[in-house]
Length: 327
Image 1 (spheres, rainbow, N blue to C red):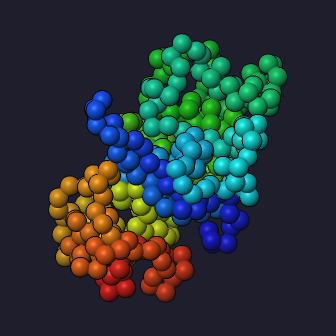
Image 2 (cartoon, rainbow, N blue to C red):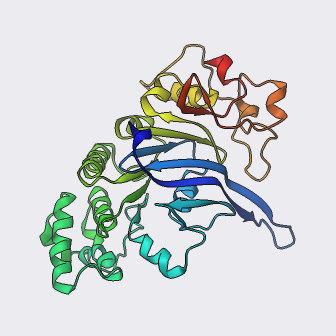
């Protein structure tokens, strides 16, 4: 059903590198944080992005919102190439694209009331006058489960979970079509995480939001997301419907992630991952996962496998030379 929904945003061969400067006399080395990612986000869907820390998940989210310019490739949002629009047009489009950041303590200005921060988007985009803004802020705080009378309070008067609700209200103020949530529950207590995840699920259903949910918690992704994208060292190695991927993972890295997660899909013959994640400044040749892959062969070093449909399912994509053999 997700594939039948209209496409809201898509990335084509999206890449982003950063300069690694480790000394005044050393030449900067490029670090590929995201490399040649093709991705589609449908209207109203929840798309999960998973992988180990440092795999490029957060960078991908920022690229999709044009908070970072790509080194190569492009992002098209509702038919508009974000790399070709004027600054004024991009500013108008930003009303429809919002982000909820990981840290609920650092993402809010400690010196300003939460009401004024939630109202920022309304004022910047001309969506409300002063009196109407107060009413809309009250409605937004109610929508995320907070008392509207607390709008005049400062962020330090709230718990971590409450601050993340404030951040969500701020993101919703501009009535966006697309929200990127970058590990929004990882900094919260376990007892609060489920509340925030359920809130996001309810808001997505109620408002018809497209949600890109970045997380390392596979349980949360399984609960919330229609589809899942698995990243390793800046590349997408597998993507497809969440239940199908978690029930029968086709890439060795996806299998290892699931095998390492308590009470998730396990296969007795799936060994734990060996070694460390390679440096993004000096990635392996060919398949970036081959140095840790128990099924690696000589051809895995020869070239990078394309992300292709496997298992006879057009919506199951895997980047592995042996995907058909290992299924």
